[in-house]
Amino acid sequence: MKRLVALAPLAVFGALVLVFGAYALHHNPQVIPRAMVGSLAPDDALPSLDGAPAAPLHTALKGTTLVNFFASWCVPCAAEAPTLSALKAEGVRVVGIAWKDDPAKTREFLARYGDPYQSIFVDQEGRAGIDFGVTGVPETYLIDAHGRILDKQAQPLTPADAEALLSKASS
Image: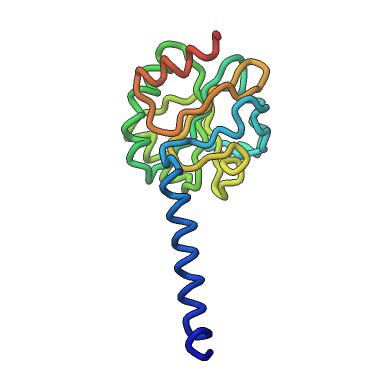
């Protein structure tokens, strides 16, 4: 009887390994959560990078807008900077949210890689990121003129990705 009691934790552990192993075999790690797509964009009040007091995000959402979460410590964010700059040059409205970043480092990042944003908000605590459903940076959300999230890109934007994302604004 004592042997059975001693083996019980090992049996429970083995059962858990089987359950989680079976889940992992049937789970696609490439699936990107899109819970907020189709919902109104969260309207968190965030301070701007230039030091202005906190303002609701909707003040920066005028017409179709891309909301890009980025950070100075994010290498893929630097890789997507040329694409965002090209979008700005084409007249696409891009709003940046510096996610979990130090404002001074954000300014250095923008000085180094360019500033493609019409407005930049600071989300040091990451609250807006949680409300949007950010899983990591960079992430870009396509917001329509009514403030609804049309789609989400959860990887660095390439020109082709940006074109595909923006095409959803007209469909």
